[in-house]
Length: 96
Image 1 (cartoon, rainbow, N blue to C red):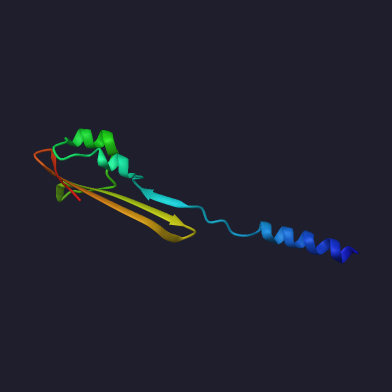
Image 2: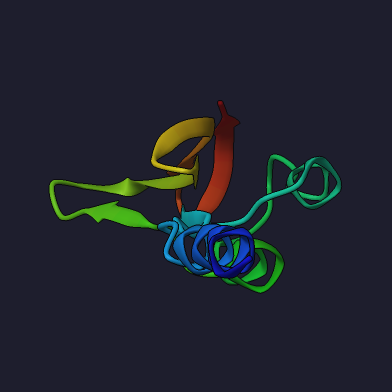
């Protein structure tokens, strides 16, 4: 009788020890509606207001801002989005 009681208890305790891997998100969380608000001719300050600070700003290419979004689910990269904005004279000239 004790064995029948111990088996479910041990199984429950062991299942509670399973490792938990949280979903890790890095970069700028951009959705399609937010990206669609960025238009050619917008100033850098307007882009900052709309999208926030870029993830990467290259000192050698000050006219290019990179917005990257990564999502890892259980240690596996499940989603990657890239948005590259090029500026000319302080205004958006190209959206990739």
